[in-house]
Image (cartoon, rainbow, N blue to C red; front, top):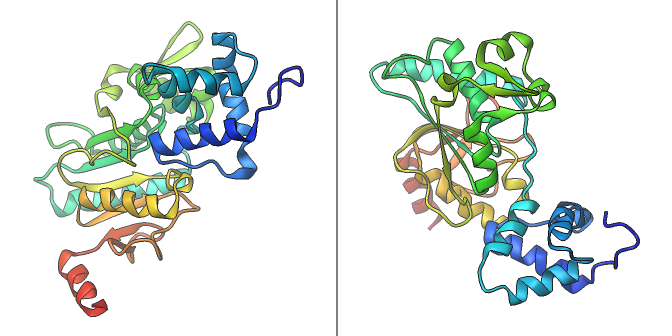
Length: 288
């Protein structure tokens, strides 16, 4: 929280900042988590010598470029992540990838990690698939990782992590196999970083990366969107997935009641299968 010596932010300032986040990123901040606004923006206040969020909002209103707004939005994004987060889920993704590869051995699998933050999820996938024998040669899975935050993507591309970050989810064997120590940091080896393509993309406003994907991971992202925005995002995800492909969401997220483009997978519990176009058309006709 902002120290007591600083003025408490006005409701108008808090509302404007929350509205800016929703406008730029499509994300909402729940009323009971409004404290995140003050905590996340403290570094910007210090950098600009401002004593309150109201003063920051005044600068946002008079700014001639969108740079300050971009900085504010980037600070408000939740970049919580870790290596092999929900390891059982990633193991199941590995099982699905192996099965898909066996079914189409002459086609390169494509995987999209949407909302990848600082890169731990796609790098975990790259390690996992390499360890399962899917990581070499021209037919190695293509992993595309996207995020709205340029700062997060720069960190992901650098592959540099602190001791604390590297220990969250990585056993010593993987640490030593895939990372080098430089000073007090751990840096992903080039052969690991090369397995992932990092790209900037706003799920709320931009089209999906080109091509069709066999597996899409969009975990713990939809939680921050309104129901209407979730439907928009599901449309984007469905446009990018192969018929019968798998969508992986976070533990607290579901497609049920929010989209007709995905249905629960019978083969992989907890995942969602992209609806076959003919079935989707039949449902729409029946509803009409």
